[in-house]
Structure formats: C-alpha cells, structure tokens
Image (tube, rainbow, N blue to C red; front, side, top):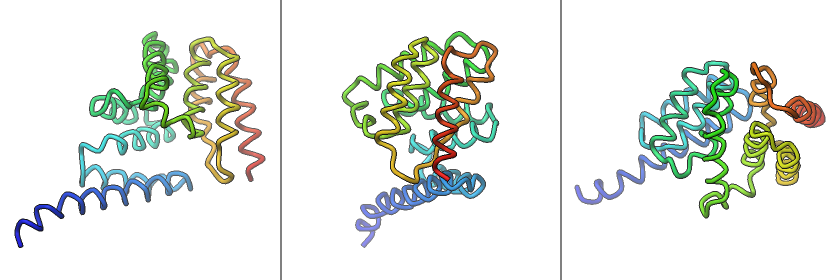
Length: 196
C-alpha cells in the first residue's frame, strides 16, 4: 500500500501544478491578474522547480509594471532551464532596453539561437512566440524581419487570443526606442481594437 502512494504521489503533484498553471494562464488571458497571481504562486508552492510557471509569473509582473519582480521570475526561469528560456530572455531584453542597459542585445541573440534550435521548432506554431521574435528583431535593428515575424504571429493566432501591448509600449517609451517599434505598436493596437 505504501509503495503505491509513493509512485502515485508525484503524478498527483504534477497534475495539481498543471491545473494551477493552466487556470492561471486562462485568468491572465482574461485580465484577472490577481486570480492568475494566486494560481501561479500556488503552482510554485506545489512544484518550485516547474520553470514555465516563473515565465508566466514574470509576464504578469511585467504587465503590472513591477519590473523587479518580473526580472526575478524571468531570471529564475532562465536558471532552471536555460536552453528553453526563449520568452524569458526576450522579456529580460525588453526590460534591459527599457532601462537603457546594453546587454539586451546579448539576450535577444541567445533567444534567437533557441528559436533556431530543435527545441525552438516547437514554438513556430505559437503566435506569442512569433511576437517575441518580432520584438527581439526590432531591438536588433532588423525591422523588415521583425514586421515579417509579426505577420507570422497574426497568421497563427487563434480568433479570441489576447493581444498584449506592454512589451511594445515599454520599448516605445525606452530612452532609445528601436526604429520601427512605433509602427509595430500601431499594428498591434489596431488588431486589439478589431478583436473587440
């Protein structure tokens, strides 16, 4: 009897963690930031080594403008699984650029290396991953590629998917905004307005 509890217990923990992560993601998509925060924090309590939760929590804090907390969570994500921390690297790069730090280019380069890796191939069907790539490319001065990546994001977006503007807005308000970010922000705002 004791052996079956030992074998089943880890699966139960993973299921509970996944449930909290999924529910938190849905709440985040519906702009229920407090509910999402509660679910993400509970998921971390259940399984502190579950890297993807830190990514979502970092995005939540970034949207709320709590950059210190966002940076802590993205760095935790990067520490736990550096080879798959694509979104965390781009988000850290955006915050670096917003704060006028030069290391942002290194983060974007590492993220694009992940995009081109075998693991990164999984991301190619996700609209948010294309949006992240667009943000990295625009910050690296590759405007035409960034606009193409943004177009790719719209081609694989599902109909009611949330359109997030905070990354674009942060870059537009950076001390040295990348050329073309205003154009991308206009495109995203129009898309968000059309979705209503």
